[in-house]
Image (tube, rainbow, N blue to C red):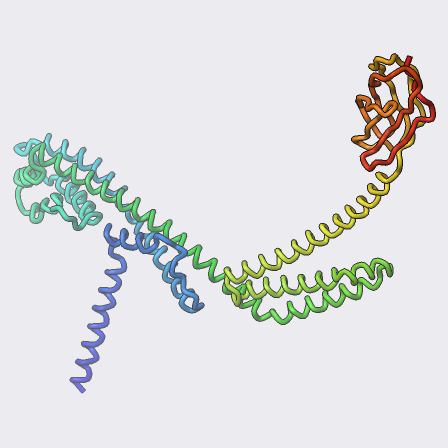
Length: 403
């Protein structure tokens, strides 16, 4: 029985020791190298995020715990910096008071000794260890109360030393404050990186929740789309018969319903995480290209149809023969050069004009008027003829007279 009690006592003692060590380790301030290593691991907050929901939740919890711990460390650094600043001011004033003491005239207790001990203790609490020796640790006034006031005064003067030693003590405080400031900056960067990592994790948690929700309700979504598609077909029946014939005959109704079903199902599968980004983009791009090609093809067909109809009409217009209704003037010299305006209809671009078989110079031709300059010709009356490029001709109802 005694052995059992001893074993149980040893197990409890060992457990308490391990627990104390773990707590001390968790509360110990992080070193600069530890923070740098952690920052390097968090350089890409979106990288290596687990897909498993349990692992995702576990990492989010760990990040939250680390954020709380790092914020506590940052607050401790702020408090430590404040303590060091106050200690430096108090020490600078105390050094002057101690240097001014005349130990031969001191009687009773020396209050400066207690003040110096308090300052040294506060500094050692904030900066207990360092790569360099802490000069404040060498200030020991233990047993100072057992000697005479004069000896207490002298021990106090010896503790702070000369001006160089006093300056060294103050400089050490400045050095620790600079180290604290560097650690605070590094900790602030780590906290920012942890917040970014936490944000990325929360996004994935939200996305996973949405995917699960959509995945569970996918059959409802597909059912709703099917009902809407049927409703679309039913609604078409309420339009006039000619519009129904046009929509159904051209396949627009079927195309609309098919595209809507495909788009909805693809988006639902994408939200549910069943389709990845590349596949989702490819499918949506393919459907978009199909819709665009159908629209452009239909528009092109309508344009070709309109063009053909316009071409036929233009061809019919061009086939209309020219007609001359008047000439002005009707008389000109035989040497030519007389400006004559020919009025009529059906004049085509490129039409030619002859006076008695001799070509005249054509200017400003339109479909209803042609301005010409008469060529030279022997005296007498001649026929004036307009010839279109399609070789259809028109002769003026009156002749032109050369004098």
